[in-house]
Amino acid sequence: MASLRTALREVRRGRDKSARYRMAHLEVRTGLAQPGTSPGTQLPFETALLTLGRETGHLEEVTRLLADYFAAEDRMVLRVLKRAAYPMTTALAAAFIAPLPLLFGAGAGAYAGTVTVGVVFWAAGCGGLLTGAVGRYLRQPAFVLGRLLRALVIAIEAGLPVGHAAVLAGDASGSTDVQGWVRQMGPRITQQRLATTFAGCPHVTPAALAAMEVAEASGDYANTLGKLADLVEP
Image (cartoon, rainbow, N blue to C red):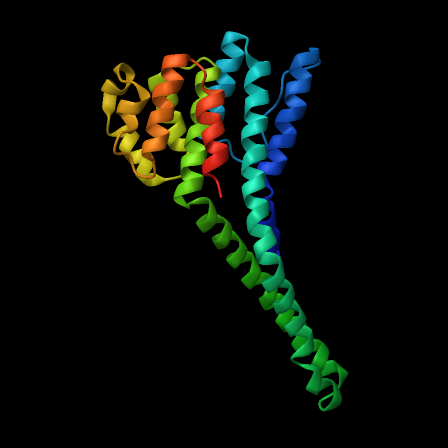
């Protein structure tokens, strides 16, 4: 059961963090308190943005943006759970149905023992499969690009320089390919436009590069990169 509980905590990360940042946003807005740490381990771009928000006095805006980011992540995970619900339920039913002949042959004790073992294996197997399925689903190119674009919007709107925002967004993408691409740019990333930085980057499409050009020209990142993120995610 522990494996399944661990998996469920992992898939609830986006929901829990979104709720915490909504509360933090309210706390800062009303002046009640400074928000504490978010649930679970903080991602690098979370830590950087929260620090920036405290130092610049834009903590209210940062907490709102982070709440929106993790709400979007939770919507992605819910799609996985909907797809996984049927096979998981079927497997659990099989753990009770398959040993039924024992109930009429070896007796209730043998049946109960077999069912217990089956349920334990079901919980362990489902935990691993669920965690793996969520991980694979969120590593799809469309979701990698979606997280990259959303993180860019958050970081730039929070006031980070474009180069620093690109590095943090690469971390937030969850793709080692994207992270490696951004970090190999070195110091020159601070002098480049976004489209230059991400030209040729794995998972970054021509449409995304065009949106980056428009965003930098117009200064409207939310209605360019943010809207594209909504469109590219399946």
